Length: 292
Length: 133
Image 1 (tube, each protein chain N blue to C red):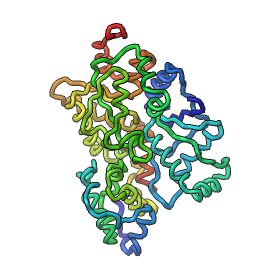
Image 2: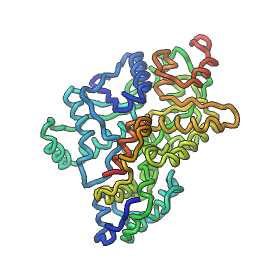
Image 3: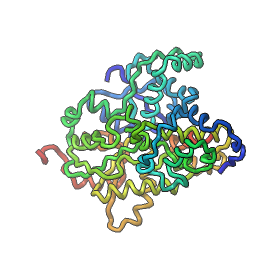
Image 4: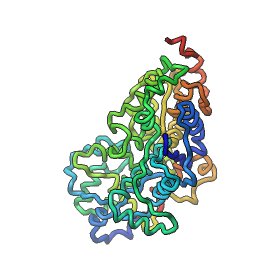
């Protein structure tokens, strides 16, 4: 990953720190350690959807300038929301020379953004640059038989122009799960919204949306669910805690970041895992020899 | 819910929404695909395709619908619209008509310390971006 700057975003330094720790360990194991962008700031969290207002693009553009300053050609993110916001802002600003000029003129304390910094999600880098084959080669603890539901949510896939896969029929997480020798479990709500920031003022609505996602995955037979968004993680785990006591059979679902699944298979630092995940792993073979 | 009375004599309402969003509401031919795929339609007092219809009719009363606050910009409608209408931008335009008049939907000062402590930053920042001016 030469010339690639890693943009963490706020959550990765706080409640999603397990996501960052596991991702860092996985990339280290693949020989391509993450190099953090210097002086990064909040991306703005959500992409501004108004056409008449450039002000809300500035937070993203500042980070693109940070990347430009350190000679990076690409930004890679772990958080799906940061990925979406940075990439959409980049596309919007670069689409029209007048917009770029206005933004540059306004931010007179910054060097001009010249355009051309690419924004990627780490999953894309692994698929397109590192290659899933190299990941498979690094697996020391195959997750054979583990049934994993890929939960995409919204911001990795939509809009189509910036998404990392087909919005309605994504495959990247299933392919990634297979790379770790686990079994992907497809389910109806894998790309439906968890309720997102509405958790702030209408939590009951969010819990209902998250409930549909969790129960659909569990009915399909999932033992584990992976996500790449810290906000989806918050909502899904909150909902799961409520759901758990009312589960008819004592079926459990471990919700983890996709990088934590890879860290388990690589036997590197995983960050904190739910207790139910530890139980699942006890039942798995511990070395490659047992399988091959 | 903030009052909409200030907006009653809104001249050129549809043009304002189109300017804010950059979308052409007349591109919509009311097929209903947006409503069919909307994760939140069951929470709305007016369905997504009905919102666009009211915009076509230049009916400012559509501003009173709760749909714009329920919409979380998940973009299912945007990716599936056969006419390329981005409804998420129309919803944002209607939110902005409120928010630019300081008619906030979320009162930051009303949030409890516990809420602020337990909610992830991205939830708070996103909510403030979408629901406060």
